[in-house]
Length: 494
View (cartoon, helix red, strand yellow):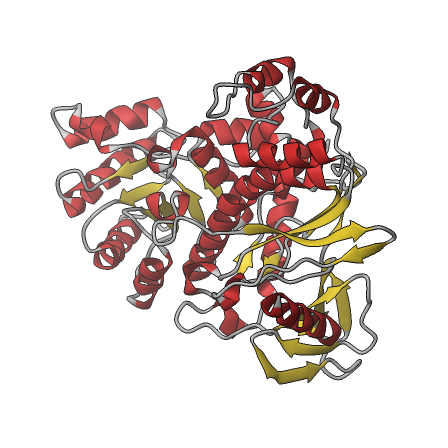
């Protein structure tokens, strides 16, 4: 039976409309008072800079966002809480009529998004929200919080999986995560990014992620002798023995693990392997492999942990390490070297009578200048299934010739020619909700992982490298580029 995950509802069992910032409510209140709350508007969710100084990101969080939208409503308790908010004059912040309006509010937005696991690049909309402007404002913070962190983790995990070069990576980081939500979201997103499993049993129960675990130094230290600890562990779990061998001396620990492994074999069981958690991991793994093979345990695996990240894993492989499984904690669940993605949610269009008006934010920082329109992303794919480039365009003016410009360098102009540079052109934002009703069939988590794996495999190899990755071409359709430039000129003149 196909398992449909409901991450938020399964965990909290209540609507989460209050999972937002107060200023989302104050903006909505302005429109309610002015009678403009039903005015149609379009918002885009995207990030400005690719994380980890890399060449791509892996979009994650859509399953959680769908769950959030599906259960969106303000409860009586929420409204009571909001009624207690006061301004600096001590009077209620919101009129009772506004709270009554919130109590009856049901989403009527259209949502389009990249499927979870999609490869995405800076300044491309991962999600587009179209509908009453009040509802667009209310959804800003929750949609961001449900995509920022998982996208970051899924991207980090994919880099580690790439470095591991086919050897499985397990997420062991719950104890180092930023709280319960951080731990669960990291387990989910690391699996999206290609990890084989997690030590987090709550994530296993909620999401069906394969679980795994070995032992800690505390168990070894609780016995007077390391050998007795290994024997007790083997007696308790003869079918799941991975011995942590570095509590006192790794080489001596391996010797003892082998002795216990031989006793296990005499009882009809096989030792699963040993785990290294300190020291020169490349050298120790080579010696462990040799010792295990010579003792008749060629199938026993060498597990390795100890603050690993993609660059350490890559270095270990380059040194000829004989590691079979990587256990990764802190560096993936906290995204240690870049703990925030910085995705934003910006207004791109607003209905003005029968037509559309395109507001634009112009900043002294070029990267913060927004893009107008109702944006879509078109990806060009060659005959071998390789991604060639992306084009951001305005759906209100569908491109005729796929003529594109680098938005930050208008001297770089390109045109994708049918049958030459690409074989397929595919629009990436797909319908998720129409008038608040979910129209998208969410894939299972293993299906999301498989999709992400196929997406990553379709990237040019240079885009995936860690040092000075190649730039993946993301261009703006020429008409949209001209519109943006025209609006910038007008805004600055004003």
